[in-house]
Image 1 (cartoon, helix red, strand yellow):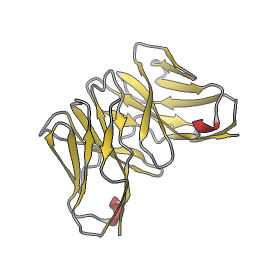
Image 2 (tube, helix red, strand yellow; image 1 turned 90 degrees about the horizontal axis):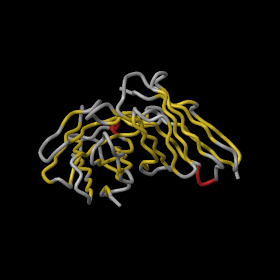
Image 3 (cartoon, helix red, strand yellow; image 1 turned 45 degrees about the vertical axis):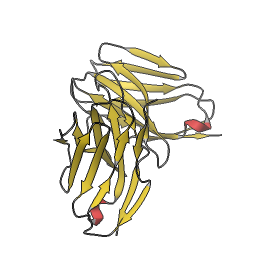
Image 4 (cartoon, one colour; image 1 turned 135 degrees about the vertical axis):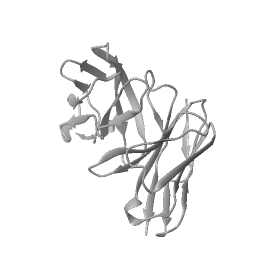
Amino acid sequence: DVKVTQSSRYLVKRTGEKVFLECVQDMDHENMFWYRQDPGLGLRLIYFSYDVKMKEKGDIPEGYSVSREKKERFSLILESASTNQTSMYLCASSLDTGFYGYTFGSGTRLTVV
Amino acid sequence: SQQGEEDPQALSIQEGENATMNCSYKTSINNLQWYRQNSGRGLVHLILIRSNEREKHSGRLRVTLDTSKKSSSLLITASRAADTASYFCATARANSKLTFGKGITLSVRP
């Protein structure tokens, strides 16, 4: 089974801090995604990547950046954390969206105080 | 932008009953997928149905797709308390990322 591991389940950070959320998948998936999930808003795509060193903006990229230096690792960076970035962050990977579903990590619940 | 919209938003049934959840979408798709999320956890992929398929089964799950009506339904038969979760539909266009709906909260009473 493909496994997607997110480095932290819970994280508390201060306003203005730079925050790194790490995601690692153990299968050879090209595609990786970062979503945030908020009550009443569902899942919203922040960034995704179809290959190493490649990234594309999703629906809500403002305030975020990403890094994909190796195929298995996709990092989400909050350049200067703000309270409105308090959310559940979900990482996912996929072999081919046309034929396979996504495998999600367990999520990181980030609180910015 | 949200492509899929689930209906109802919340559903409460007795153990042993069937649960039917619906999803509607707006544009043409390559496939439609259903996911489950237990409280505070990541999503788990349940089933994928391609645009040229009309019905698919997996265990107690049955998914239908009507591309003319741009809608899908997920049926869980003989529900169990362990089926209590949020369910999401997600749509994919060709060579593209998934877009998720806001989810349906299913409660199965013992």
